[in-house]
Length: 249
Image 1 (spheres, rainbow, N blue to C red):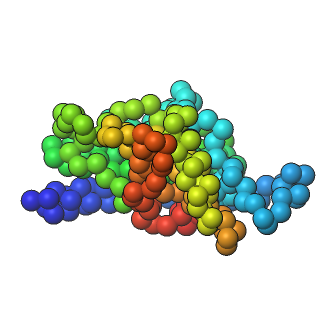
Image 2 (cartoon, helix red, strand yellow):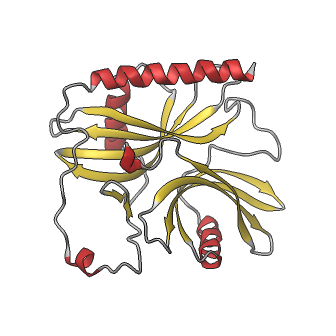
Image 3 (cartoon, helix red, strand yellow):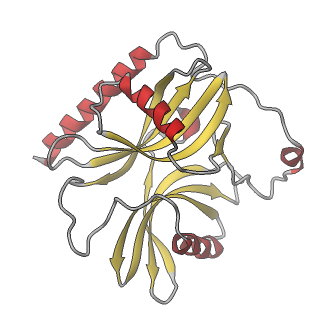
């Protein structure tokens, strides 16, 4: 039965995105990247340290993840061109921006199908807003992370996913400890997706992850972190975005 439900949901999402892509035919500048002028700080940056504000594809991390009225309006305009029903797609956090002939936005989005028992999926939704105020979905990058039966009543001791997405000091401290202990990677938490009270806390977090040794540019992952009562913190699960990094959108 679960395989049948997953097949139905996958087909529904592919159909929805196909309709969105048809709407975007003829947009000349939606996916084009305009080279930005280098600033003095960028010129002085050395290869020993990655730029924590940058992710692949020329995007800059948003100064605030808040879904403002303006971002919500852009999101609504773009979603209105797809076959998603109202309320199925919920913008959780603004990830990054890219200046083009207009603006590209990466918006972390939760998709909850109107089917009892179906899982909630999470996406990095790429939206292009042109200079005339129109907006279109240009890519839908799915995460391997899912929440089974998102619409079910909360279970005592279970995960809570309706938390505020702002990263708390506790989450920042947990990732600071993990980064300090990991000589190969550095983690920048972006948005809090969910949390669970255990003997300590479990956190589900959207993160930017950089490989320090290779000096490659950071990628996005959804990471489950356990923070113990004694202050110890460790990663227990990692979920990738299925189509690779945002630069491949």
